[in-house]
Image (cartoon, rainbow, N blue to C red):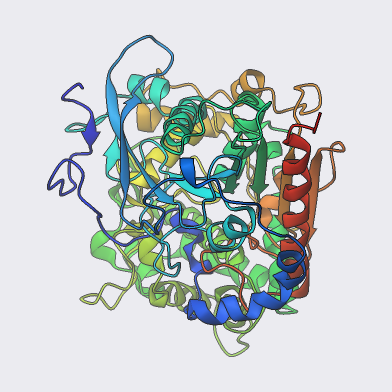
Length: 576
């Protein structure tokens, strides 16, 4: 194994494979779904929903001759040390890919394997799940129902274990190595490795001992889940893709749908919110621009002047697209962007509906009649600073104990020439994970997201030209965004023509990502389930089914189970 590959520099490596690192959960921008409730109450509440299904199915005899001997709950990470750094150039350099396993309910060959796909964040154990896995609906409901094993893979270049260690990867290396295609190839190798450990690999679909593979993911991992089925139908049998923005990535989605849906969701939750936000932001935007200095404007918003990014204070040192930059104008644009993607973050977590949601509280701040626009902006950022889960998305957390002001620089991803307005107008996140996500959206995972005049945010059109300028400022002239390359290579712009089948799309209609997903059935075997009250992959929360779930989500759990059960039955060889 090459000495350059393993754990990334800057993390405490300890031994080669430490049992675990920090307890942060992956996909940090979605972690606010976690609601601190004991797991036992969730099981009790959902037992009524699943009792009909569970009681109507008798478990087949367990083949103990080939069942994994240590069928216990495994929270500690596992490592696949033979993962190829580059699957497509013939090199044999490898790295250790972290993954997690649960074989607690595994009934042996002839039963399925769920692959939960990690995304744009570190993949540490989920503290609200007794098995440490991301989605209890999968690992603690569907797994026992189907007698399945569960494996969960960390995405390359996110988290401490990466294909390149000890130094920063070059732009050329990231172009080649940080792609959905490489991530899918990682999954192929890990699935084969795991099925071999389960004594399944030798069986094909003609055998009753064949172990079907079901991929599961939400958001970008939902996209990967569907792509795994499209690209590797001989490896994957079924894809479950929640909040998966395929239309956003094939460039057919309306760029304004994202923030228009955020606006509609906020208005639905707190009537009058959209008008109140729009009015306040229109005025605050101009007040920031007209301030005598950046320091004065930041004082009005209770922001920490000593940590304001240099490109705002001294734009002439960092020229980009501003021909005659005014620091207060740059600050105004970035503050409006941060408010937009922070509202979007609150919307992603806006489930189940209620007054405890960050989205509801944000609306109420802007609906305060006795507050000025700048006071509303200040109070909004204070709300963010008080959110205990903000540290997951932004490692340098706002509202630090030794600060009584909001640190705007927490929105900066790592790397040179970082900006608050990044390649992802839905928000890239901070730190190294933020940089890697920022890079992906500068390459082939382009998402065109703008602000329409109908949204509650100041209008701002997304353009390919601005994206290119930003990305080349960050990563060099050699990086040219390729918005159409991914669809052309993976053929997901026409799923029927690609021969796809057995893909289930699920969407929360209050989730802005639904504007880039499939909301209707594509064929008899490419289905869509929509949840009126659902937000961002609300069917795949990190706590799992609970007594707080709305009826549409509860019914969704049953429908999802029935669809998977039918497709698994269809895969089984017919009796001769």
